[in-house]
Length: 153
Image 1 (cartoon, rainbow, N blue to C red):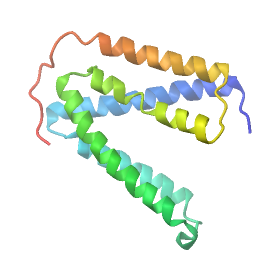
Image 2: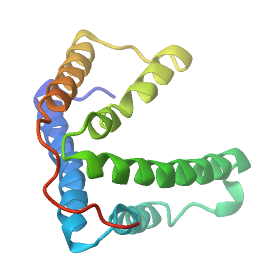
Image 3: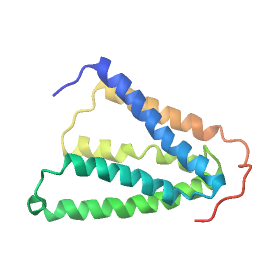
Image 4: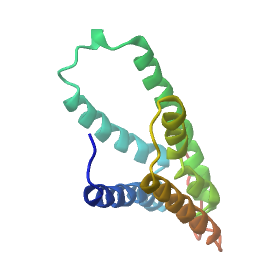
């Protein structure tokens, strides 16, 4: 099923804004003593509820064990990611580490292209280049250390 570009462009913009709001939530919580793990727990809870509602009709017995294992692996790596996010935010709101985290979609794109035969069209390629360029520009503009004390995790 192919969606028109006139629909995909606003959706891509909205997803970018939503992803930046996650970073803003981390940053706003930091001076208030709210650690990234608590922000991630709230995001995970909302995501779990949405997923649970959508998957309510699926019998768990039919879920392959590999899917459950991959879900557990994803959860563990998300926890590691939260620890990296905390370290990145301690260095500043646009530290190169934080900016590099926003490129986490690249391995997924590469995997789906190489192993699943997904085609990267010209529009996809331009979007990838634009995303990488934005991350590089943002990571290069960090000029001063943060003006607060890093919070404890």
